[in-house]
Length: 141
Image (cartoon, rainbow, N blue to C red; front, side, top):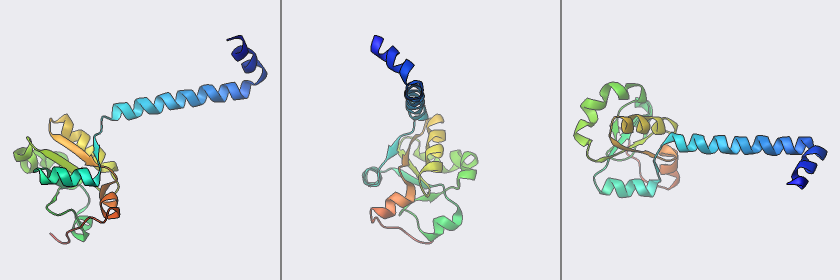
């Protein structure tokens, strides 16, 4: 303990940097823990789809029509809250996989759905991860 105090006195900038980095690390861990997001990989998504999961694309209509996961329903993120009951109530007992372009809005949408007691998960990396794994897309409606 004495050596730590002596080192801190001799190297205040290094000691301060160590304290700041420790605080940043702890804050980051709390942020990740509090996000409460459940992310699934593209391969896990396929497995869930094979077991009856509902897939929801929260991107814009233009992006949806340009290419989406086969069988995905389209509900734009901005309209999700208003259309949840009508579009997803029948699927409340099944997993709902939400995705967007890169996983950011999908994570927020899945968190919102979990708050309403849906079993929602986010496709980690969104459609970008799906296509990077060479999985097929459906175009049009």
